[in-house]
Length: 206
Image (cartoon, rainbow, N blue to C red):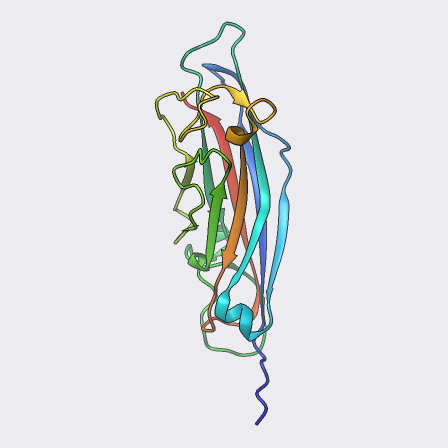
């Protein structure tokens, strides 16, 4: 007996970087370099992928640079966070991927945002979430790489929560982050093409 596998899922991931640079108070500047979008296509077209999921390492690399004031301010520090967007303003449920198109007349559900897992890592394990896959459940969720309003931890210590002035050029292991993704949708979802955007935001702690 031959069994034909007909289900097909295609996921589009967009990674976008934002830097809040207006009204700097304690720092001279904060920036993600380069600040350009990254796109990734993940295709599920065989049993192995559905059963095991797909992991892609280094989908994006975040490089941070934070400059102090000309007269250094001891309160200069920063945070780095992740958000999910799924075009909910156009009617996408807050816990689902944005539907671009579906195939056939299936009566299942569209993929849940929780099917996507994200891992952040660097050589210094700077983020408390280092090397651990995390999930979003809805577009209201925020995942911290370096949380807001922490005490200042100076660069050069190669420890958790480094958030003082510095740069990937001088302290690469602390100020650069590799972003990995894993998608494991299972078999219960409608076949089709679906999209999510991951946004990373770097900003000064005020």
